[in-house]
Length: 186
Ligand code: HEM
Image 1 (cartoon, protein in one colour):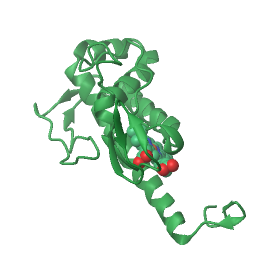
Image 2 (spheres, helix red, strand yellow):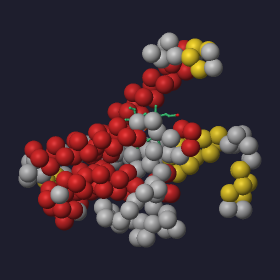
Image 3 (cartoon, rainbow, N blue to C red):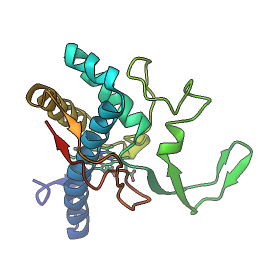
């Protein structure tokens, strides 16, 4: 479909096709895996929340949203300013390379009360974990559903879920946030 697609009567270049395939492949597999692991870690670190989820599966979307906010699978996005941008009294000159730090915005004290606390109950709308604007993640809905389904299955099939290592080893990445592994018994 991509090879045959046209934008403004022109087919995509090989580089555009390749870039969409690579983005969809990595963007669509690694990030949901990290979201699922981080949500499970949050449940293991917050046993009351785990009990609540076991009693009421309707809270799964809250768990996924709060995990997206609190442990954003993508820490930052690389952007280029298309023109001069005024922001809080500073000017970002057009053409500059910008790193927008999603994880920091998601815990901003002007936006959230007690931002470092993991809590599935307040409304955490407005997090930026899928970015914002023209490059907003096209896989946001499917990513959310993947996580809800996976965690729902864990709750169903692993009644005695517990971790086997007290410490979490995080991937050494500035860009993504994810555990290297999460050994559990169930
Ligand atoms: C559930 C976890 C996911 C998170 C946290 C996430 C996060 C993001 C973020 C922050 C961006 C913006 C990147 C940028 O502007 O540089 C993005 C873009 C993108 N995502 Fe996701 N994503 C997730 C799942 C998915 C899935 C499941 C797919 C595909 C099936 C996908 C495909 C893409 C693609 C193709 C882009 C590029 C969009 C563009 O540049 O216009 N993502 N994602």
